[in-house]
Amino acid sequence: MPSDNLPMPATRLTPAQEKSLVQIVRRAARAEISPRFRKLTAGQISTKSGPQDIVTAADTGAEAMIARAILRLFPNAVVLGEEAFAGDASLRDTAAQAELAFIVDPLDGTWNFAHGVPLFGIILAATRFGKPIFGLIYDPQTDDWMFASEDGHALQSEIGVPAKRLFTSDGGALETLSGFVHLSLMPQDEQEVLAPLLTAFDRTNALRCSAHEYRLMAAGAVDFVLSGTLNPWDHAAGVLITRRAGGVSRFVDGRDYDISVKDGHLLTACDEDTWNAVRDTLAPALAET
Image (tube, rainbow, N blue to C red):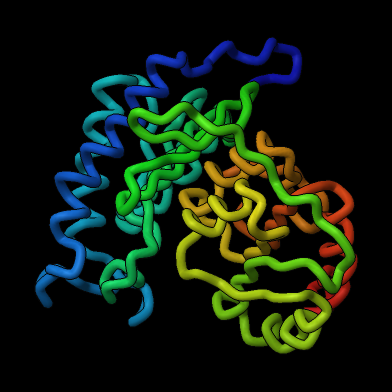
């Protein structure tokens, strides 16, 4: 990490570099993901930590293609891909300490993809010493993407269409809020204390796809996202895009988002009042587990 008495490095991406990253993920989707959708063979699907943790030839092929292209564009950067991490967990700490790192989920929503559900995406974030400075969430099905830099607006774009600025929702009373809660990914004791509290909201569910959960968050369709699984490839881009759309994202205990943090619960909400309301409703129960 940089010393407190040194200036923050000027590492940032240019608009041209951001456009290049968009083209990198679009090419990977066309080459490695879309041709395999609903056409996977049994030999192209395997599991990692358990039967629900699926990896396919599309995941590995897309990650390899994206990583190669990023390193050609940024030869001194660290690349942390979800599949590379499965083989070398130290990559997370290396990326968190790097002046410039790229965090890649080559196929978020793999379970959906492998089961023929058209709800998946590519997530790419750039970080500076663990903090997101650029976020991109791409939908191969619609060929459009949401993106933001650390000092720009959150935008949604597609070829031939002017970029549209994104805004989070206006929030509201607790009983009117809807959100995504990754309940099934939490330990059993947390599930048992949290589940009864979710009836305080209008609606909670999960999509098995952080890419589309954060896209809906940034577009104002839902009011909050709560996760206890802190894989940086799931969250780094969405945290930044949501913040630049007007939202708030930090850990329930008040810590700011950083990809090095491996414990706790990350809460992203449409605004400060909503973040506090959701936190006040759920945090006391989490503190008991």
